[in-house]
Length: 184
Image (cartoon, rainbow, N blue to C red; front, side):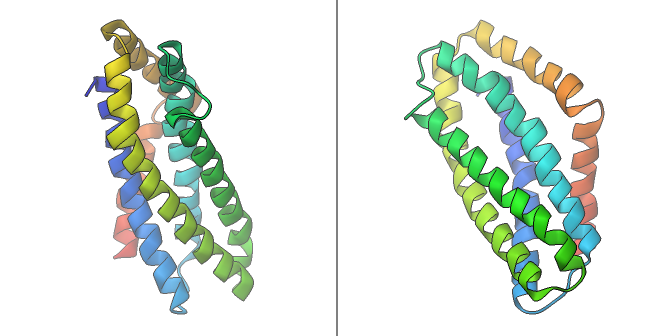
């Protein structure tokens, strides 16, 4: 694997940690437990900021265009599937965010919406990550030249600097530890 795909896979491991926490949170909610709204808000922030504005930004802004430039179709192929799943995940995260204020007030419909969107998002992302780790990233390593791979590393660094923001990656990795500690 190239340094760029290794970086994305490392981010997947971080994302899976949060997904696991959210799945356990959803199960607890479905048993009638009320979790601290602030913890769910922080987890929602992680999904919006780290997953979408960092990880997906690297894929959509750098990896997928590099693969397309090297003959991998963006529609109907693996890239098209990944893009559709990114959009589906964004819808779940948006619905989760919309339900959080009602959840904080104990609204049963909002509690159900939070649990449902967490469960659906987690299911989607677990399958999505498997496809990327086992199909898309190995494909990218086969079709991209050494120069393309080095260019991806530079582009990922630019995205971290200009899109995600300095120090944000590290802040979100620290947040995972905070969420794990809060989950017990």
